[in-house]
Length: 112
Image 1 (cartoon, one colour):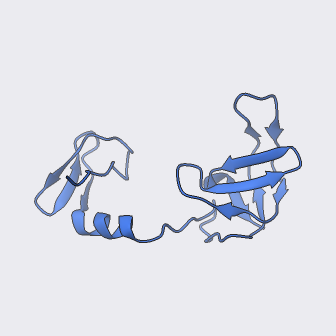
Image 2: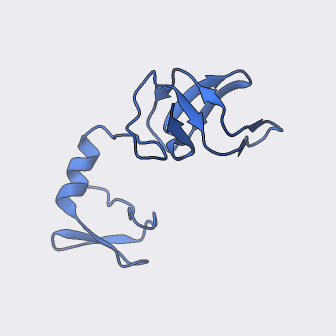
Image 3: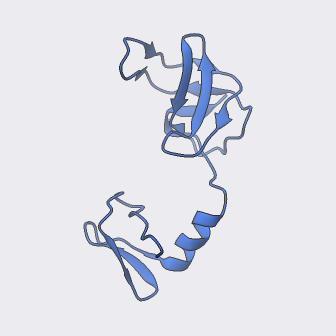
């Protein structure tokens, strides 16, 4: 049975098929089923906070201070991160900094 995707507008799971579209019952957003099916099959493009496409091995800079969950470490704004690795999932970027290894969201990074 095919799974119904979450709403790209509000990220809620209360969606349903309606003709050739998916509809979100929470926010009313509609999007075509065909585009959703092709988006799942293709590789996802990861973009930074400015909309630049990121690739493995790029150097990036943090655009805001980030507190690390379960730790007293704070990653400071302006920290340069070299040689990132793109991974799937909620946190798209895997990297190593002097204070350890981290998985970060691309929306907090900009290409250096």
